[in-house]
Image 1 (cartoon, rainbow, N blue to C red):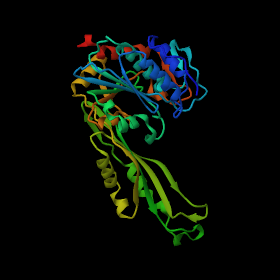
Image 2 (image 1 turned 90 degrees about the vertical axis):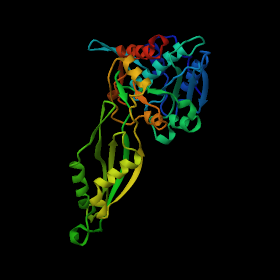
Image 3 (image 1 turned 90 degrees about the horizontal axis):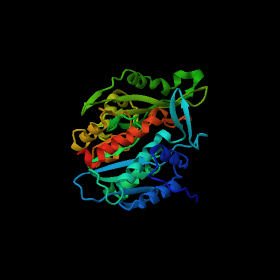
Image 4 (image 1 turned 45 degrees about the vertical axis):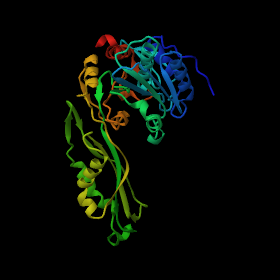
Length: 372
């Protein structure tokens, strides 16, 4: 197994980001980077450190009345000829290019800088802190390292507020939507296309489902001042046997992005209600997966203090993130980190360098005892 150079947590956040990007850690191959992170955290002397697979956990135990959990994943999507990192000036802006610059090694670098500041003996943060660096976020949810920590070391995730340093372009994105995928299947009867009247065309039978989707009116919900807009869409259609056969089956995959005031059962019930006519006519609905969202929890004192420290209003997270795992424990959680999420997973993934330090400074202001 390869060994990486030691991580210098006293280095500036740009240098640390580059060191992380230059350490390839595609999902499933995070061990070397996890080793380096673990060694760096243990070297601080003021953290309790634990390893769970390739997830690395560290926390202060100062007996403070509140605890903040900071979390970020170490893995990236497959490299697209964009490692090692490269600094360029484009249109007068300094940019750092490379796989993971935005999603989310810049956020990891900020976390490590905070660990370096507050994870030493004698440090005086305003809150006890927990740092969670985890693996396999970019692949199937059953492999997700944060899920493994939740199953095996649940107590490590408890706190008064969780901050997931996913890229948000320096904005606070509160909570997240839930997401459900399901197959709607329509049955028919096969026949030769030259004698189509002898069959029942399942693809034609799916027309009503598509019409329902096209006419669907998305609900908007305001929670804690954040507006979540729902969406119900077809994302795949499968059907057909051959060019001369009337198809006897057609199925449509739908994706329901729902506001976090619905739980998984309510989301499924809503989808079944929307397609009640099709289901009554014989269509079947099979849920492929359903992950509940996360309420913003911005009325909680820790969350309100975080918004004040950052100095930016919160907006709804339109998408699903691992904040939902914290919400399942009743912990308010927000997404906040450097990097433009629209550049994540692209060949040209890059980070505006001038967005790095403000993210670190905002978190220092919130976490420092002097901010009280």
